[in-house]
Image (cartoon, rainbow, N blue to C red):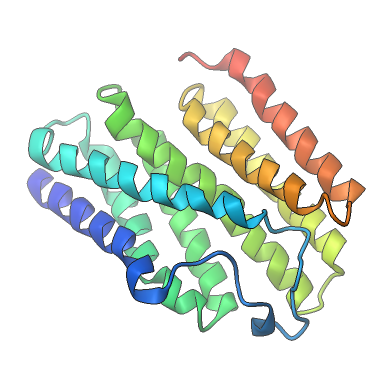
Length: 233
């Protein structure tokens, strides 16, 4: 079974990484996909921030490939594979879904986040840069992305104005990130990736300047950085 899980994770990582080539990539929902078009939503990071997907894809391929070739029978790797498989398998179909339905895509990205977080908490103590680091990056970006998707739904379906929707969604992201980083006491790559997303939000809200969203993003960054003193590695 260990070999099977290792194979499935690598295949899912391949499918996940290949999905942008068949869908044209993704740098945010199309504004017209919402009843209230989201042309410049304050919750969404600047476009450059989405480039982190390239690093995530490559690192996941390296990690799952190494795990398959060299650590398929290692019990230290076994617990993290099933939830990671869930996240990657859902991720492999996420882009085509996102091009059709923001609502369904939001549901799926929260499932991806749940799988990635469970996997991150289960990662072992060996091969940190190939077992822990890629999962931490995935979980960190999904923490931000899932909450951004939620904020877009809140504003795009006119349940809330754009700025309050952004503040609620980003607050949830910060709470998840701070709680996760504190309970992990490791995997700084997770917090750094969330910070990357929050910096992207700050850049996105620089023109026109949105003081409330910028301040919340800055507070989130400071809170995550403050937790570094509690980490064990």
